Length: 64
Image (cartoon, rainbow, N blue to C red):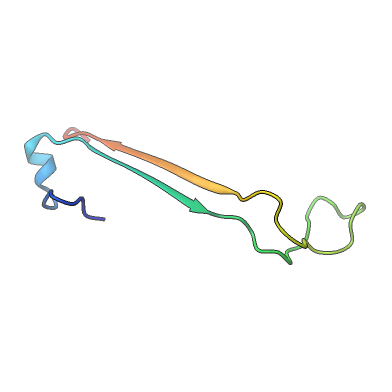
């Protein structure tokens, strides 16, 4: 991904600091088997109670 206003590779020579964040929804879709609940439940997942997200933070200076 290119950082707006900074040419690719220019930040390494100029001593820039690069930071980025990301967030992705990784909630499984309804209908998947409920692993770990074999004795308590016999069906598949019927819906979603709470969304599941993965988050990432990226930091890099000119030294890597």
